Image 1 (spheres, rainbow, N blue to C red):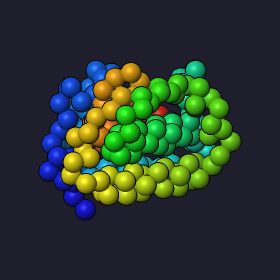
Image 2 (image 1 turned 90 degrees about the vertical axis):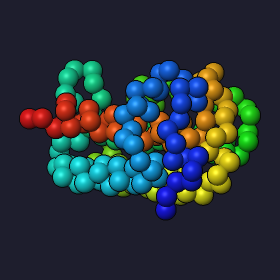
Image 3 (image 1 turned 180 degrees about the vertical axis):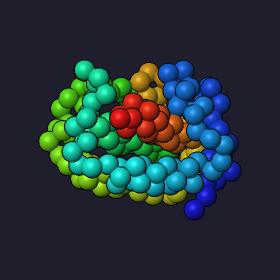
Length: 178
């Protein structure tokens, strides 16, 4: 399924906090739904090629393991799409920030298998696609507040994609180089 007209337009800088500008800018031109679908498939290809024993690898002291990175991407995507759901439904309640390091520390990702984390990430992405595919045209431009900043549903779709792409790039550049 393809995005609506509103979703097909890249969000402008008024639709998200400056912190997310790099994520939004990193998303290629095109239909955001198709991009999310394609990138979900790419994550699955990369993770399927990794031997289970590599899941605990850290590229430097104090950095997350590959398993923690995958768990973080799932957690962040859930949070971004929860925000998108709330804003899309017209909920004006300000939404809190989250501490990604605290989440990674308590998630228990290193006690799980890489294949289980990959399966979870796939399920999260499928839920993300189902949500964004279900939105009516007018929902995409609705705005709300998250982390004390204005954000649109459209921006949250781009942030979701850009965040996952950012971590896939880091995974390839820092974790998978031998």
